[in-house]
Image (cartoon, rainbow, N blue to C red):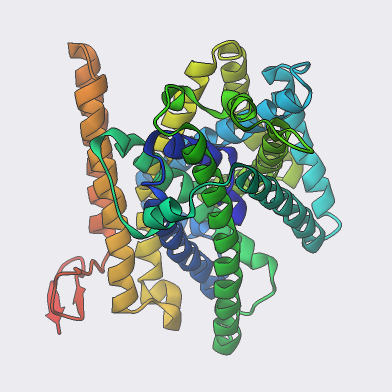
Length: 454
C-alpha cells in the first residue's frame, strides 16, 4: 500500500514542488500524507469488516450505468499512474545503463518483470512483502544519502512544514502533490490487500484487533514514505529553487542536474538517484498490476486466471506507455510536462474513488457495527470537500490558461459539466451527508423522507 505514495509520479511531484516552490509546500505534503492515511484506513476498514473489496461493493451499490462510469474513471486513473511508473523505471534503466538502453527498451523490461513478481507470489505473500521491503529500504537509503550529500537548510525545512504557504504560481505543483499522494487506484487496492490475512468478519473482536494493527502498520509505512518524499523535495529545493533550471527539471534530466550541481563522493549522485528511481518504478508497477486486477475483477465480476488478468491489465497500460516512450524519447521537456499533468489527472480522479468509499463506510447495512461514527464522518467528508475544492480551482485555472478556440472550449465545458454532474450524483447517492458546520450530531437523509435528529 505504501508503494503508491513512493512511485515515480510522487518523485516527479516532489522534485518539481521543491524546484519551483522551494520548501513552501512541505506542509501540504505532510497534511496530504495524513489525509492519505485516513483514507487508507477507511479502505482497510471496508475490506476487513465486509470481507469484500471496494470494487466488489461498488458493483452492488450503484446502478449499471454508474458502475461502468466508476470503472472507466478508475481504469483511466490507473493507466495514467501506470504510464508514470513504467516510464520512471525506464528512465532509471536508461540512467544506470549510461544511455545504452533507450526508453522503449526500459518499458519492455519493466512490463515483463511484473510477471516475475506474480510468480514469486506463488511461494507466499510474505515473500513478496519481503521483496517490497527491500525495494522500499533501497529507496530510503538512496534518497537519505542524497539528503545527506546536499545538506538542505534545517531551518527552512521546519518553516516549510509548520507554516502553510500557497501562491498562484505554485497551484499546479500543489495539486500535483495532493494527486500523487492520494491515488485513486490505491484506495481500491488497500481494501483488497487486507484480505490476504485470514480474519473472520463475523467476530467483532478479531475485526477490531485487525483494524488496530492495520492502523499501526499503515502509520509506520506512511511515515516512512513521507520522509522519503521529504528528502526528495528538500534536495531539489536546496539545489534548484530560484534558478533558471527550476522550470525545466523533471524525471528525465533530474539525475544529470543533480550531478552537475552536487557531483558526488564515493558514488556519483546521478547513480544514487537512478537506483532510488529504479526501486520506485519496479515496485510500483506490480502494485499497479494488482490494483488493475482487483478493479477489473470487482467492477465487471470477471473470474479469470491470475496470469490472464495480468496480461489484460498490463496491456491496457503498456500500449499507451510504449507510445509515450517512442513519441517523447527525444523530447525531455514534453515528457516532463506530460508527467506533471498525469499527476493532476490523479487528483481529478480522486472523488470517483473517495466518494463511493465514504458512502459505503457510512452505511450500517454494509458495515454493521463498524460503520464510522459522526465525528469521523465529518472529518472524512471535510477531506473530500477540500480535495474537490482543489480540483475546482484546477479546472478554473485550466480554463483561464489552456482553453483557446471555440470548439475546444465547448468540448471542455461539456466534459467539465459531466464531471461535476457525476460528482453531484455520487454525493446525493449517499444517505448520510454530514455537515462540519452543523450543530447536530448527524443528519440522516433517506431517499423519500428527510429526518433531522440532534
